[in-house]
Length: 435
Image (tube, rainbow, N blue to C red; front, side):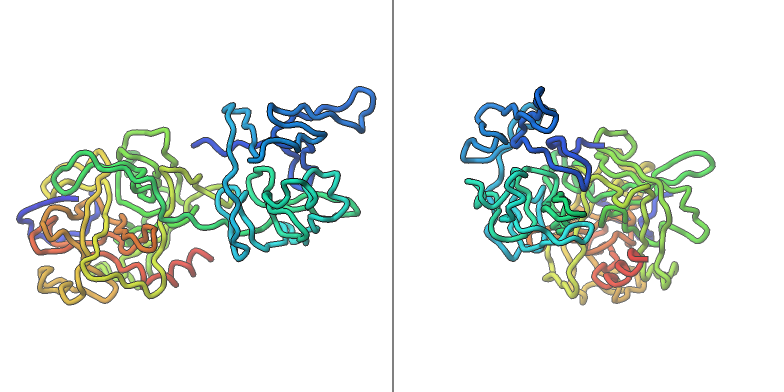
């Protein structure tokens, strides 16, 4: 990100674990849910191994600790505080759940194993703690139906099923609502040449791609987290023969090389560059990196690590829409070093009629490219920002509109930067992620 009064050279901008949600202890999937509710402690009765006694937390009583305050709460022993349940949603059309799903009121009724849920009014559930005849059933979303619910602040909606003649519980396969493009934005504090120093929480999808060369590891390019295990970048960052073992992806860092408690680091399983990438013109300058991880989910989403939204098919924002770029690139072309800290800049989308070879030293501009720049000649991407994000606010979320690709100088007056037009690659992205 840079301001440079005169810099005519054509360049690509290529550079030479959090706490998990706590919950009540419970049996493993397919087991029996604890009978003591609201954090009550269950203890077997001395006089019979088949009976139990619930020791209820303050404010609750009853055999199952089911009688208590009007607003359901759960006690979290790790932090010794109470979590107040969110007001339930009345939207029965919901097709996904947010958070732990305690407010989910949709009509999903199958479990992760494919089993059909049992009606909450079934008599067999009267001894399970959660059923349709509880005094607070309506508030918990329980009733004469078999829809998935989360009445006990579990990690996700669940329901009861009949299996081998026994009533058991299972998590449901309700989809999680996407939270892509949401962030806890922090106002940039220090304006510098080319932009402003920023925080990773303002750009939690920003990735740093490092490469090992002759035993030494150095910063290489930017990247963009688009889901749990995939990062987008620019194809020109990965010349032919570049082995994925040499690559490392770092997420969650405000400072480029300084380790942070919020960072998450991954090796790269493989990368894919567009089959029609043209290194001469930088047409189709897009690449996908698959993060290496033993499990289905790679990143743990936090305030510092969070995916950006891809644009909706056919999305075309108005000319001069203000958007954001971010990266660890140089302050200006003549800078000997990359920025030690993440920077952000504000640029505007140029009309296609102004994104022409005449403005870009007669370089080829294709329909797969878009232009963006700061008309005040202050902010721009620069060397080292390649592969990073150009994001714009749309429908309340930050969406990835462009990938930092190339430019004529850095911050040259009336000369925009050039970005890969992401909306033209949605099918390519989805097809390669599914492989």
